[in-house]
Image 1 (tube, helix red, strand yellow):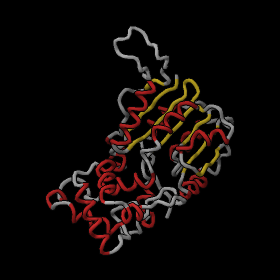
Image 2: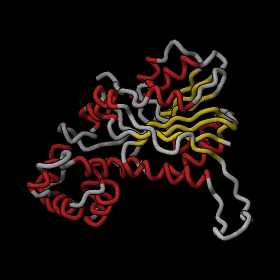
Image 3: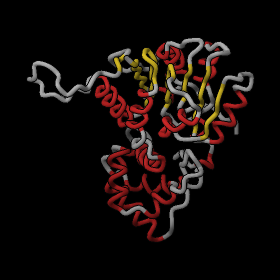
Length: 310
């Protein structure tokens, strides 16, 4: 299957990054290289792009799409390791960093990856297939309490305890091997009247398990901190989130880096010595236009936050 990913907020990202033609840019989530191909169009041969992705399928697709450019460095890694990646490339500073935290259309649509509740496939959900933890282990080996915790915290599902109970009861009879089996169990756990309203009943639980498998939230704060450290003055960081948990982390981390002072509010002057590292390019997150949502419904929940290094 062809690796497809419709680049969300493409024009807004390019505008937000304020590309310098001889700059160095890092795409932390290279994916199908939609954003990166537009960045490269604005770079001179002296400019450079570092493309990071933990998904080998994504890297293969990106290399094919960007084959006409010789100023791209491809890195098979997790953007959590951005500091060691840049150190290994002897890069001291960069001019822009992009992270699109969405799951690609390819990952959702490719059955064998096990991300989608719409298709029956082996339980997997690993973005990096080198990782040992998959959705299968989470569903079949986590305790009922841990399942309820991740479904509640990462899926924000009001029926977390009930869903966890149903999963444990079903797996005691036979192991749960596929997304189809899991989806049916979740549906049976949610009362009929709630199944008829809102999104697919399995959506929140699948999101929660995917986040747990890939440790998606745990890596965000460190990535922002390390990334900002490597930005040149005037360099920008653009991060696209797709659910409130991610957005809250990015919003709060930007806020902390913009105003790190820990002095009591009634102190007349700052004595902690902590200085602002960034300023926000826009106070509110940038969201897709109605036109973009019509063309790409998966962009509906996207939010872009851009910060500039002082």
